[in-house]
Image: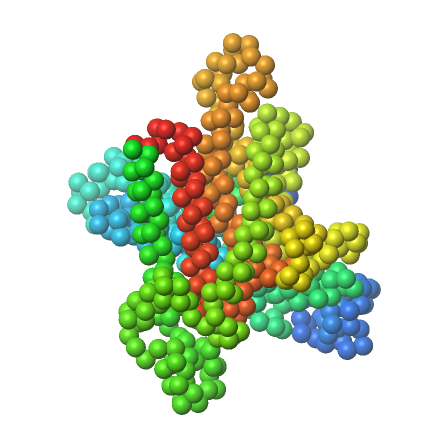
Length: 291
Length: 315
């Protein structure tokens, strides 16, 4: 870390503290996200049972001292399944967000820096991908390759790419017209160097906000795909899939749906709260949220 | 005359978008790695079966030719046969589209006026209790996927307090009025999701307009705040709202797909999910194209409304 200017780490820590603990709602968001990160790391260790452990003598039982989350039609403890499922959900959402926003940054930066034909071609591809509603595009992408969490990541990445590319391109256009980029051009620097070393460091604020918004949206999309049967397959403890599997038993065993529903909503609320706090701290405003 | 030219240009653009989308849909479903025949029959199929199916689907021909044939068929109204249901695709898909449209129109018709009202109230009472309550409620609602809202509504209003039917599996011959109770929960689910997005966006655009000089001027002239908002600010705040509604049609379409699965509602979204799960390629392609057409028409409608509300846009 020798390349960092002096005090950068301390400033970053101060900024993080302002964002994460700056207001009551931000603290709530930090707590919720922290809880889920904790579950993602330690859930399988802390869970009382394995996610696939059948207990044929205890099927569809209400939450009890023995089975804290109640049991499903196979007698599996629902709380344990939710705890096991946290890791897959967080990893899936993180990977697809990084992939989608990463591709978006690449496309947006290239288009804004090179303009002309490059920009034109990239933006028409972006337009074409945006012409399909997000969930529909993800479903189509999963058609050929079949239901699998890995493809869910790729699918959501492709869905996010054009949306992030538009945001980043908007920012990068003004950066590309700045004096320091002109200076770098005059020095005869290569395009890649200018994008990575001159433009990217100044585009961080909107990119970070984009990441938090996309992360929340990735969880919504991934669990929706799971719910539709297009993501992880049984017996995986996928939160969306668990709610789908709970539907036939909704009348006699509502806890089966309620636990994963709480898990999904708390992680998304947490991410949205942090996103709001970040936006406020960076003084950015965006009208079209996660469209 | 200029208005006609404007609409004509927009229609041309719509046709272009649809052409690109049709290539995209066909490309994703048929050209991406993965063999359609293997996809349908499974990896354990014999080579002879695979070859027979490939011939039946015309897969032994080049992709470009197959695309041209498909587009020509779609334009002529020959939409092929469903592999899953073994019935012609056209009546199947159109009937389902009609049912989904009922749901979508109901949801949009309820949510738009409500969202504008709530957004205005939020902006007027900025940082007061009511604004903050609306803020928290919409934040939570934004964070809930439709399948959770729907499930919670079923738990509350169909099981805990049995007021409404939990599923929309009604006799297809039932009239709209007979089917009405079963439409309430799916519509309510969609309205909640839409409301959350649209209220947040309307409030933001309203606040922006309220900071404009002409609004301040109206205030300084001593006009009552209510009059300033309703007469002066709202008209200009409605302009971005049109765009907001268009953005939300995309959310709505995704929402309908999910909600139809939650409530076993026999619409196009559910058909699409079943088709994807069973690799019913002819149905997937046509259903996706119809959904894309709906989305494009919604965007066109938004563009035209924009131009109507603000003549400056008709350059």
